[in-house]
Image: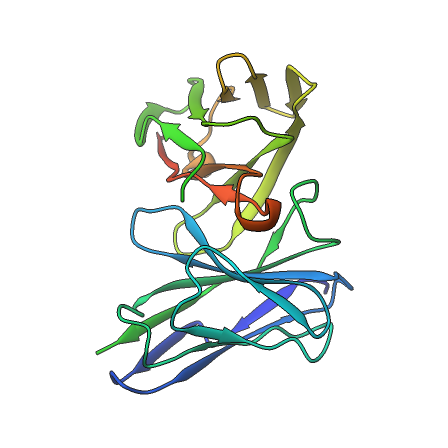
Length: 114
Length: 111
């Protein structure tokens, strides 16, 4: 099966701990994205990567970090500096970066920090 | 910042009726995309309409774009209970020309 996988589906952490969310794709896409979604809201872009070893900040990058060491993988770390980390996190990919391409989304990870 | 804004925020209809959702945006765009999200799941791409197109169809979906009014509409004809989901428009006004998503319309289709 081709697609994007995110793990785990649910994640619980204590305040002050860093946590890493996994995102893997086997679509051979160059671009990958991380979004945050709060209840009843739209998606906000955290980080995106146009190619391996490159990534750019989105609209709400503060308190998050990413890496892109392999084309297939784009993990997101939610650091203790993120003031309100509880949210639904969605990873996506597209053939290339930018507005002309449809994005394929993973099933999401729901992070709860207490 | 949210570029596209959907209207209404929530819509409840009976199966078989048509559902119309609207999206407004603030600045000029190159294209506009519509996505669907079932509760607690990832988004699924529905349709992309370019700025030089006025209307596009895909199955029971019809999308229109009016660049003079900076608005788009998504029409779902003969709705089914399985169409119950949130629908988002996305425009290319994000950082680095990335997509920016609106707040979505929550559609409920009652059987």
